[in-house]
Amino acid sequence: MKHKERGGMGRKLVVNGEGGLPLDDLKGFLDDPVFADFRRAWEGACHGQAVPRRQDISLRGFAKFVSNMQILTREGTGDYRYRQIGETVRGGLKVVGKGDDGFSLIDAAVQPASARFIDAMFLTPCGGLMDYSIDYPGPSVGRVCTIHLPVLADEGDDCLLIAFNKLIARKHTLLPNGALSLGKQLCRGVLFDVGGGLPEGDAAGCDFEMGDTGYLR
Image (cartoon, rainbow, N blue to C red; front, top):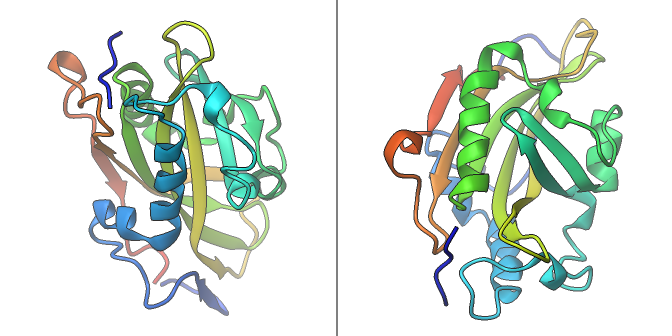
């Protein structure tokens, strides 16, 4: 692998951010100030390369993101493990810890498209945004956007993904959901170039959208 140089029933809707985000244009999330800061921290770790090394991802450089950040490894298609996971992420999911397979939390209907998308980020490597619903076990549903950026392992060309989550909205519901589920109401993803190009050939065309972007209304 070569790398270049260089709405529904509910009591209350809580929305993060000022003025809302362009939810109908997924790439618009890249303009969100928090995601832009995260990208700048990642770019600061590149040191002239298109993709930084794991050893260059320092706690100091990412201190304000750590709680909502995770580092993922790829064991195979559909098998993505948490190498590191922030306290807020662990607390929100409750069942995920270091070494766990978080992919199993994704709703079965969207797993094939999600796996193809996530594989593309690891194997190209490139960045990606995922916008998805989260059904909490209790009486609430939410919407999360996650930005993923590639990082090379300290040795060799294996790729990791460093990711940061932002809770976009959360709404209380009348009844508990019973089990945690990601992407059941909405799951979509778009890839973006960080300097190493985008997928080609059979891997091209991995962007996808499934579900209803208006499910929280």
